[in-house]
Image (cartoon, rainbow, N blue to C red):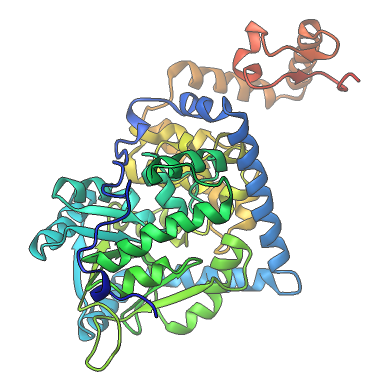
Length: 482
């Protein structure tokens, strides 16, 4: 017989689970540079290899998922749906709110991160909530929700296995879909053994079983569950959540109170739009036909229903989103957070998500972070790209990330955030390379200089004249020596 909330009552969690680790909420944008953060990942050979292998695997799964389908037609239809939804966002938000409130959902609006924290903390205080289970939510990472709840005496437990490991380590997720790409199984084994108070088998099954045991107690004793939301369906007032673990469904249906924190841009006009968006989200995220769990939250439990929360709150998060409407960066709001652009980005695969200094990594992070955090704080991220266009080619809703990154660079220059010496250098470079004779002369000088610096066909990583390029790699001049 399965356990119920009544079976466990106030039963404490297993040893080592009494209090979750405090997660850092002071992201590093203001204290470090992209290069400094990237160096930390590049100094860990395992992390570099693991991130590259995992993203290659994910990209291959996505390609295989859409073999035999008209993938481009599906992407184009998704682009139209998202473009229409965002272009008419205020109307569809009003429709969603009206339908949600008809079903008994209590809707809140958070203009910024601090207001989102205040609203959720106030709900917990008013309802005397002391223990919360939480499904994976990037919006909650944006607002540093965990620390805000800790401050009002709430113990909050991440229940996605990867997010749970990140929380227990006092770390942050490094990928939208796979939070612990940058961690080893040995690190998880060491962590869980310390939590258990004895040595656990260093096997995935045993480690997962340990996490499951404690999380089951947390689910059954939680006063509230907090989730994100993949889509808000304006037509019905519902919140849709996709997960591959049962934690999302338990979080939203077992505790007496469900709180969903969802970005306002997640609105879809109609339920039938899911027929296009869901296959793209799951296929581009994990290569699956569909995720294991697709859950719809439609207000509190009604009379005669066997499960579901007694109260449902939805906090609509703006935090810079509405400021993008109608402007040159509006298409950034089309993002459905699948992580596909991270998987194909040659920069992300080398430096990982933490190098971007905030919640989102890869091309979408290089766009969203400067837009949400400001150019002065995060404008350099638009330079963290090769502009190869791979992200444009894979994006399921056809966001022109390449163009948005170029526009951010232009804005940074116009606002005076580009150092004067860089402006002068690039102006001179443009003048030289716009003239065929000077172009040929400059490339000849460059080739000759590299040959002079090279030893056996390689410019060493120790070369002082090219230190920034060769700090992480040798520069091969001509053919690599055998």
